[in-house]
Image 1 (cartoon, rainbow, N blue to C red):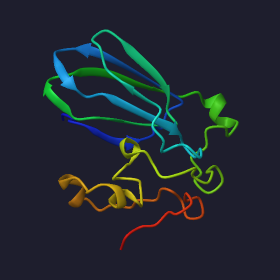
Image 2 (cartoon, rainbow, N blue to C red):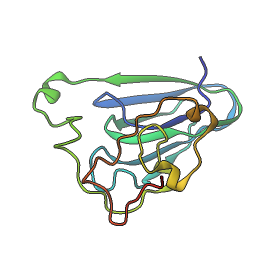
Image 3 (cartoon, one colour):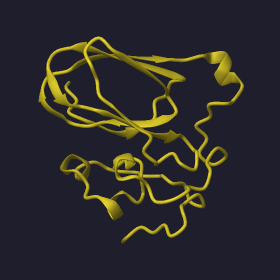
Length: 153
């Protein structure tokens, strides 16, 4: 299928390789935020603009997402790499309870995830497609919220 955009997420990889193979398009930038579990993981760090023939490498544990393609068509090759010796040391753990710092502040709007963030609707309206999904947001984990955190009921 075709992805117009991709919600903020982390990859189940140690390193992700993403190369733009071609075609003409506008939009579809990649926004990068902090590392999984870090106090600044929902803070904007960089916006990358794809160029045909260029690649970007990033750690899988870095929060990122793709904006909608505004026009045209884009083809990318994405390779998720795993280093099992590195993983055996436990340094890239996805254990939310033991590897999560208290957030440093309110999230950058671009770093919000309608899939993962409990406070998404405090800052943005859910996209139509997300309203039809059964959501189980978990971020930030209880006890790791930024000062002044609240979720409207």
